[in-house]
Length: 305
Image (cartoon, rainbow, N blue to C red; front, side, top):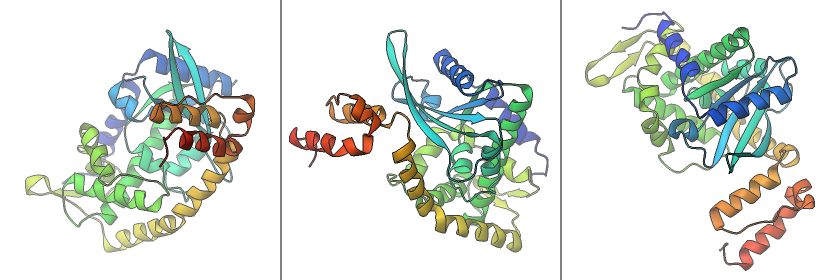
């Protein structure tokens, strides 16, 4: 049986600080922080498949966490950037929000279903303005693990392998969000990050005083009382019902506020079709209005069915 100590979870979080990334990834993160925070209190998280592979190809994913009060309304603010590194064009998608709102979302205090589900997965803290900021980010990531583990225990089987609990969690969050995921996406996440998830569920449950019984064959049984299970599922059902409407609202907002959306879309089109889309100033300023012309060009060249 696991105890209630959070020492194992804390040790896991410490790895976020020591995870190695390419120097170019760190340098760009530091530049983002300088551009957006004159006081030097920003933090930057790096995540996604490039963290696992170490590749600079594709789009690099960053979360820029800024000082100040928690936002109201829709967040985060998303932008796309390109820069030259040793003769190679690197690309990044940056989600920016306050560290206060990030921590709130990790605790599960918001209606959002994306932050804690994303950051129970591996990430690296590639920049922190101070030791205090570093501690705040690590505390938020610990809360993301606790939030995800509670729901995994509540919507998963009474007893099962860790993978079965995590699989139930990711299936639930994918269904709640407006996103297209291939069947079995949760399996690929667990397989690609097997070392990260091994032992994480018991550690995150123990850190919040929920004991876990170990049974034969790698099976575990979280000691979730009926009252706690019902409470967690009520919490989840509200967020599940609002998940898709919230995603739609964010997509509509992104259509107006995504900085660099035109360049990002043009790069995606060229990557998947081989067709270069010249980025004129008008297309850069009006990506939504420019979209029909791009679609017509793709259809004319036989790239759309």
